[in-house]
Length: 250
Ligand code: PGA
Image 1 (tube, rainbow, N blue to C red):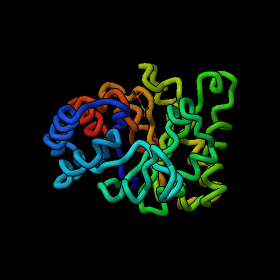
Image 2 (cartoon, helix red, strand yellow):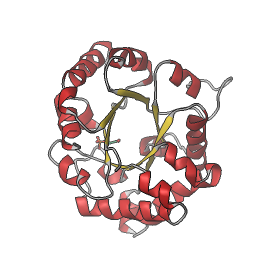
Image 3 (spheres, helix red, strand yellow):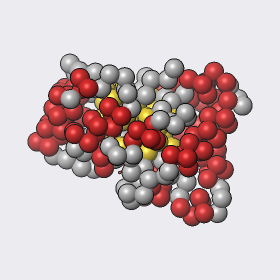
């Protein structure tokens, strides 16, 4: 049985005061979350503050990125060791915004995945197709290619150290969610692809859905056989909404 997981990607939102309030709100409602593993990924500068506030709770903290290198002349980057040092257990890797806006290639994403692993941080490995790719019928090919980059570098067993987040780019921040059937179809493809290489890894691997998931649609999406939780953007910025999704994952 795979434990459901709900992760909040706060993206570049918040302030010292607002993140304090948000984490306090989530903490206060954690009693209603009996099953799901709950993770929050604040902007890097707020990680220590949020990790401190979450320390005496079940809430885990993740970063939104991680450097592929471990130390040295990499201006603007943050290493796995640093993230670990300030309390990160997870790191989002290969988010489509990073791929599209900051030019992260499949190969770079795979190197970041490797950096997380060697620093004992669990990757939340994001994959997904654009609208154009979906319309041209290449959704599965795109997801396979993105996963293959990690498998080529780290081997299929490495996937067991993290989770995959399937996030169709056209559904992110648009209010346009994939239907439960559309999402399940891709999740089943992903699991089947991995199962062809290693059935145990595929069986234990949590595959989250991301893209306009909210309190209203979470239950039906997470209710699909191959959807093991969600990576939540917009709806993770209000404690009440985020907790409703966590509860739906029960
Ligand atoms: P969204 O973002 O929930 O706002 O669509 C999801 C994500 O980008 O991880």
